[in-house]
Amino acid sequence: MRKIFVFFLTLSFGFLHSQELNCTLNINIDQVQGTNTQIYRTLEKSLNDFINKTNWIQGSDYKTSERINCSMVIIISSQVNDTFTASIQVQSTRPVFNSSYNTPVLNYNDKDFSFNYREFQPFDFNPDNFDSNLMSVIAYYSYLIIGMDGDTFARGGGSQALGMAQQIANIAQASGYKGWSLSDGPSNRYFLINDMLSNTFAPFRDTMYEYHIQGLDNMTNDLKLAKTNVMSAILLLKKIHSVRQNSLLVRVFFDAKSDEIVSIFSGGPKIPISDLVDGLQKISPTNATNWANIKP
Image (tube, rainbow, N blue to C red; front, side):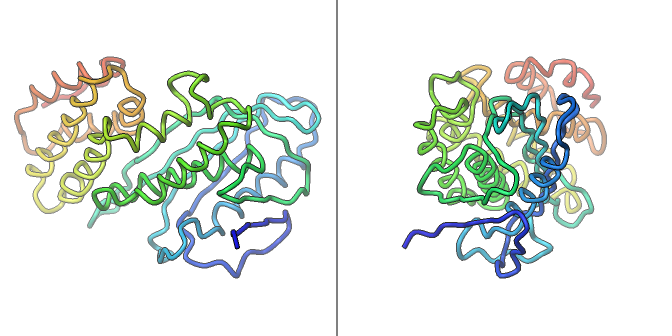
């Protein structure tokens, strides 16, 4: 029997366990004038419960301290009856070994988000069916966060969760909602997950693993070696650049990491970084101002 999660707006979900996410979801209605604000507060609470009290990966065993810190901000731009037009900003972080520092993993702004919602309607989510765009988008990003986090701890460690995100995207293509289709442009949910799982763009996931495990997690042990490993991981992205310049995944990586990279290579023990700076200028020219701030 397929498993269907039904979430009512005032329901407590204490029976679930091993939840993977520690997420704060906020709804911003600054652009919407003269509306019933209570419906947004109800929706905000219900989505927080849905995300944080769902066991997204069956059989996972996350301790409370291991849950992934993340956030989602839904910015409502218009409401017409039960139809909402919005964007969603998704961010996640990951702790660095033997330190109090949390490194950004994902920082993504999705502007192709619309949904229907009635206050107090039940939330139905079935990964095998498209029930609503609201549930599909939230579930998609929940799996994406888990998958990208997994890749930072083990090579290919996020494959199961990323596969679930891809399944959601594939099913949602027929829904007619923008952001799921090939025809919606090269920078949407469809391309984001399909590129991430494509062999052509495999260096992205290799970079995520080596940057964190070989690089950041070694910072307190051997800072010079860690910096060298971070540099090597970044330069793996040149393989993607040679196939597709200004690729979506490269932009996703630097949207999360550009400030951190400047900080890493502007202090501490010196290593040769001319190849790094040259590579950064070629791979991500839109961040040229940031790269100019790297002070060896």
